[in-house]
Length: 368
Image (cartoon, rainbow, N blue to C red):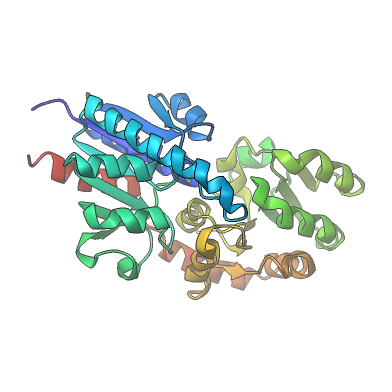
């Protein structure tokens, strides 16, 4: 059998990059001698994260459209045409057996180039509301792997496979309430723990709402592990200083997210596709605050997919400053409600997603 080659394209955020690396790892486990090449967008997170995971990557100068300043889009279009030319050359030279797109700027030119050269393409759509790029690429894709039911409103029904989103499997390796996880954060196993996940620039509302609600959270007698994200860390830590004690840990980045999830009785998070998949897989009760600053408001649609099944509580970005802390303090004390949300979230989890996606890809390319 000839040596298989795969191009995986996309990125821009962790929500795109992590599934991409997971799919590559799953393919590599099945076909150890396969060759892989990632194609990302220059200056974006994937250019650093992918090599760190042990894979080669090439960057395209592609960028998103500027909705505020229309004139900037002349440059965007020029970059797009240059990226398509470069992508055609990359596909021709690497000669892959399949190209997998995970969403993000780079996947458009790369899959377009692959389709033009007759290379089978696969899409992985993480959200419950399909992105523009994936909707355009769907008609030429061999298979479309999705994380939510009801995606036939965006894609041809016969191409859709419900696989779920690949998430970090190491999260499952730490037992819930593990002693070493409490020790890692110097927390007390006898107290309830609230995990707050702020990450990128989109974390501002969550951070400000938590800051405002620190008196209520302190009064509730719970432990709070608060990830602010790098950008807000100094400011938040300074303003939270009067409340920082053994029950409040403020950090820019949680290095052991597996430990953080293991001890969390309740999680406050944005509603990105990866976060939601992790919460379901682990059966974690959550309060989701969808970011309003994302394309097609897809985070609200992701969160609604859980809330309509009682698998999460939603608070809008606008309501968060007034309601977030009170809702969290009330919910974390309600054992019955936490258990119900946990069970409903777990029922929505899709297991072994990366392996299932790898199976779909290999079933097509090994037929030839």
